[in-house]
Amino acid sequence: MKDASGLPQSLLVLGGTSEIALATARRLIARRTRTVWLAGRPSPALEEAAAHLRTLGADVRTVAFDALDAESHETALGKVFAEGDVDMVLLAFGILGDQAYDEREPLNAVRVAQTNYTGAVSAGLVTARALQTQGHGSLVVFSSVAGERARRADFIYGSSKAGLDTFAQGLGDALHGTGVHVMVVRPGFVRSRRTAGLHQAPCATTPEEVATAVELGLRRRSETVWVPGALRVVMSALRHLPRAVYRRLPL
Image (cartoon, rainbow, N blue to C red):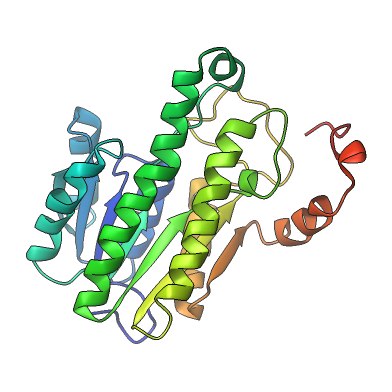
């Protein structure tokens, strides 16, 4: 069960090698979290992540999970909930893709969409039902400001995040009053190994700053969290710009 501050004692991370997810797990372990499940494709990186979190004092286990294999989600994630209640599920998997390449290779664009959206829909519904069955818990979904309005530079990735964001909002409404809390996190450009070498957008952030915002959002029981917070105002303005003006911006 969560403690009085709203922080989880047990955590399931979908996307167990995500830098942002691991930063969040470290922050929560430093508070109250004692049991962590890292779900991802079996790999040395997944085992290394688990070993590191164990050094922080948590009981860490791994579970094989493939976002693209939706038919396996019920079984794979069911094993976690069969071991006991989960206070928080962090849906953190996703791929950026390569916009220029993906435009030339539609099947690669489909893989981005299937990973970021349809895989997340499947995993989100499976874990939401499990949380509802146990009667409590939070589902934290990592969306992106890229989903707020299409950009020429990353509209394939952005469209997948737009779908995920809308899905998560609707799921939160559907679960309202059930004891399950859904929180959508919208980071800006996150400086990490995955984004090394990419053009850094304004209002960039770090995995640690996202983790701090997640903790604060859990304490406040927020439904939407922007990282950094100034992006809420920035994106509100950009959403209402005429397309003729918007497409000329260096975004």
